[in-house]
Image 1: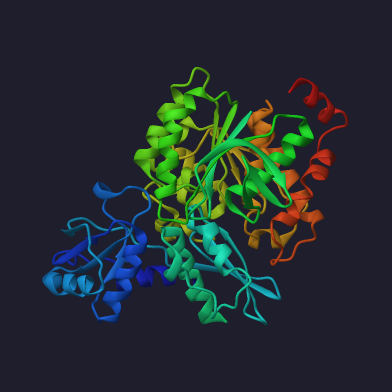
Image 2: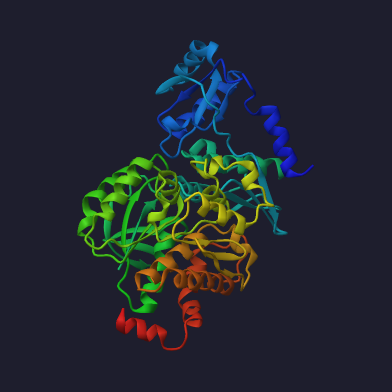
Length: 183
Length: 295
């Protein structure tokens, strides 16, 4: 199946359907790392949530939000509060939200494999599973993530989800997960 | 003179401004050191090498520590808006900064209020904010890679993370993306697109495609995009035409990378060392000397 067909299939399976926006809300946090922590807490608790892009009226430049079933607002807020996470705002969804990237491109260099998600590229030694390079991206945690991950084994390096703070960090997490699936 | 505004991936690195020198593989400003592995230190290291070769003044660095929470970037934005009117610079390059549209606009307006506004170059996070602000046309040069070009071409995406699939799709060729970025006013006067080949383009179309020499591993090496931005920024600050500088920078970066005989595991500092020889090889005899006398 071509990537385009796969994407179209994913859109129809997971993208916003007519009427689907009703009954959904968004949780707005101070920064992306709070979103990433919140996502983990809510997924671990079994809530059906999605990390998405914010509507235009609340965008600043490097944002993520969590979309959730509005009916479960109190329970979800309780789960977050239990983990010490406090959203800045809870807003009903009234327009389509931006869909995070879900296309990966891979390049096989022989000894090394590179996975690209959006603007982030992660390269690993196929034999040893050592992270040999991280490139792309533009948010200031990218050089920090590279500093902390390059030279370490894929399963021993800290994951971008743990130490990243921005959308580039989140994109690198997607590349990291894809690489983990492939290695 | 060139000014470079960016970040260092250390939470406690102080906000510092001054002349940049290279010391034992680190960039050094006023005694504060940062390793040249990628990011703004890699850009600065490449710029220092070019300025030295051309006999130009060393670049001025304006750096702060930021590991992604954005606090350092916002501190730096505030500092630049207050201080930039006192700077005497021909070109300014903005780099790894937390994308923040409101602060981007304040910085841009402060620069435009200068008595002699410099040529503006944006890469990385600051380029994202420039595109989102709708003010891309105020810039002399953007230096995206292909993934970032797709983001510039997507009029709806506020960050590369949200670039729509049909635009990101690998069949969407770079010339089409360039055209689309200009059609939606989301590109600077000149684009240097880092890829295979590298493209230099403007509103009137593609000016040059640079595809030799090829070191395929360069795509995987973190910091190679930063070095090409550092090279072009230093060339522009020396007085070279922006398009001419972009073409030369792409060639020099390729040649330096090729000379380092890279693998996907090579680190960018190994490439920076080859920049002076690559520049000397690409410039006609006597140009280095001439620029050092008239720069």
